[in-house]
Image (cartoon, rainbow, N blue to C red; front, top):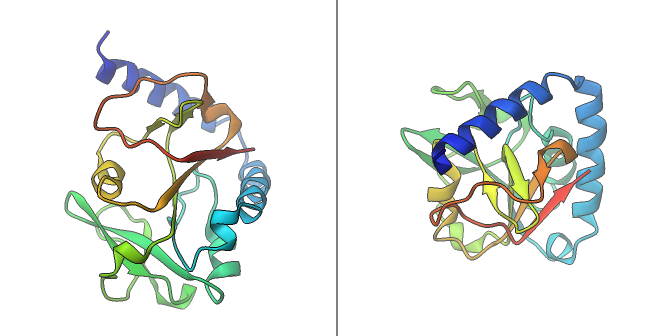
Length: 180
């Protein structure tokens, strides 16, 4: 089986496992994950943090973003074709539904100072003990993260964290993986 096929098998397994957990469970576990992140020096010292506006099956970020956006500059990705543009979060009232994937995104102008991002909190389908990340398969985050020197923290639920996952040279490693 090729690495691509192995990744697809794992993506399908995780998709089925996610269905077993309630929204309340995911919210509770998400809070635990972000409590861990809040204790990290890299978070405490960060002025600009990139996150993501979570989908229902991901580690939930909405409460964390709302808690911190008045204390730190929060940047969120916005899908544009095959790439992610960065936009500053300025409040929930300024969020719109993205055109291509129906993911919430800021309506603000593109954030052009990506070199100022201190910390990037990254979603994923699966992570491993070697800080490898496997996304949904479109490469959005790999393209976005490859030129960045920011500290990268992958976030996932325990059932998404493995001893080892299939990884390729172009897959961007995390500096740390936080899970419940």
